[in-house]
Image (tube, rainbow, N blue to C red):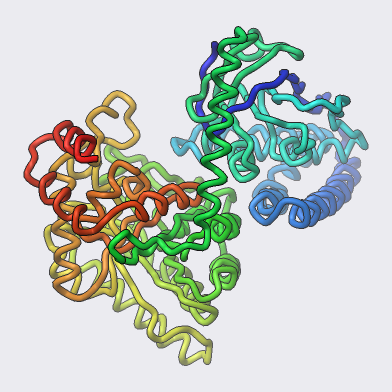
Length: 570
Ligand code: PEP
Ligand code: MG
């Protein structure tokens, strides 16, 4: 048995097919000064050809599988056209006097190294995207077609050392039952694709994968646990076949709830919305029956690239989501960078305590020129639907007052320029720092809603770094201190006639649903794939009973007691 990171749930039982990597080898050749122009011309032609291919692939994907997969190719187009990347290639040709393919390889290696050195998992995994683009570009320069063909008509479990997005999107979907990759993690594009296609997948298995698994081996993989069984016994196959059947039945049951409202047994209508990273996720929210977006993490528009997105680019991305969602609310959070999320092109200093440092709203308020570009784009997008703006990491009352001042100034600018926006646009703060919970009454007077970010609230309340594996046992949203802070926030919001949602991971924890309902939470914002399960849970619950459960848990001293109590109360 091997184990990797479970990235897309589901059981698959099938034969392995090992896909060899299609990297293009380049041999470094020296050139003379007179040949520089020729090599640069070759680059130009190859860039054009690559752009055409990516555009075509984007279109094909849009028609065949949807926006989310297609957006990976648009991200590649952005990287391909990035002036920093192209300048670097030209620099190598001119200064190192080497041929264009080697120059591409060198520039790509530099960017790969830069991305791989970042702390943020998501950014690290973008290195694979750069390798993918460089391979495509070099193949076009050399006039090679390196696509590996799969010559079997049977279904199989795809096994690979590394899987680039290009390889993933060109896989024969009907035949691929599951994907196992030695490298990568939850946010690599292959994982994102597998999830959106509903293909079970395990990543980050490590080097043993190539040693242990060969083409033709019988495999069982469990995408929920990350377990891979190689040539298993028939009793185990039987067990997993049953599990597969159960999963299928559950999926069908949940699919029936798609158009139902998330109303509790005693008629309490809860707003059930989703968290997204960008326009590519919007379709999935609708497919899973989401009633809107509770958290659009705008910082993802700033990643995957080497310079800041312009007002126009941001406006395009925000309006795309807003238009897609029709009349449904879309809460967009302003840039939350710093902490574990870095931007290589924003000169963020190394800090002793990045989570307590220059992060999120603190950066926005100290760089108002960047902040206003985002606010302008958000306000402009609000002309197309129901946009709400949310501000991350508010710890001081003055911060939201300053934010409102800048927002008003931005509205005035737009009015003077005759640009349309929603003058009644609602604003909210994320409650993710204990100080914000403790001054929730004061904050509530300033805004239209709260959204509790438990991912950070837990780390700040318990002083437990959310990224540190050594102390994950201590990171716990059932800690009574966290529950009591949540209650404080919800009560304060209701005293001031505003509502409270939750967009941290706790909102999608089915064990927590009853407590949160009982504490009076008005909105649950969860990852799109969790929407049907949370809805199913809410439909079973009664608010009155949930209130009693919540009340009782507030009197307990440890999360163990809380969990024992909620398990026993069912
Ligand atoms: C949170 O802190 O709970 C949250 C939703 O924000 P993020 O995970 O993006 O920090
Ligand atoms: Mg947060």
